Structure formats: C-alpha cells, structure tokens
Image 1 (cartoon, rainbow, N blue to C red):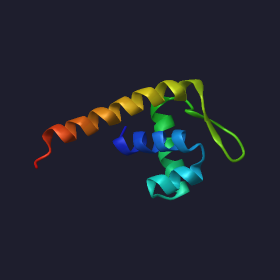
Image 2: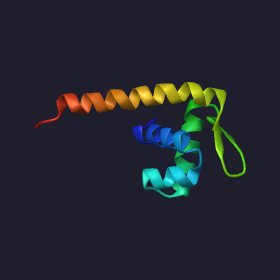
Image 3: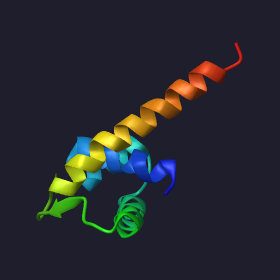
Image 4: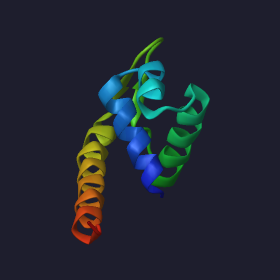
Length: 85
C-alpha cells in the first residue's frame, strides 16, 4: 500500500465522484480508478458501492476512511516535525 492510494481514496470519498476527485487530485479518472482497484485488491474488499455516476462508501470503506485520514495526518505531522526552516 502506498500513500498515494490513501490520498486518492480520501479524495474520492470526499468528492463523491471520480470526475470531481480527479480534478482535486490533478490526475485522470482512469488513474484514480486504477489506483482504487489496486487498493481494494490489497485490502481485500470493496471500499465503495458504485452507482451510475456516484460512489458511496461501503461499510468497510467507512472504516478505512477513518484510518486513511489518520495515516495521512500522521505523515503530515512527521513531515512538519522534521522540516528544516
């Protein structure tokens, strides 16, 4: 699992659609779809329920979202703590 997988997962969850998440993350929709598929394969469960034009977090996705945000926050804190001014 890579940090970009978690960043993209959070972006998709917050945006609600691949199109909006792609804009936010500055990547293509196909990149997001591919990265999400990799993450779901690694965690062994679907993180979103797919609808025609929207994505909704699955139950497992809701659990993973909290952890993903926590990991990303800790990484940001570590970077800030070790940043040279």
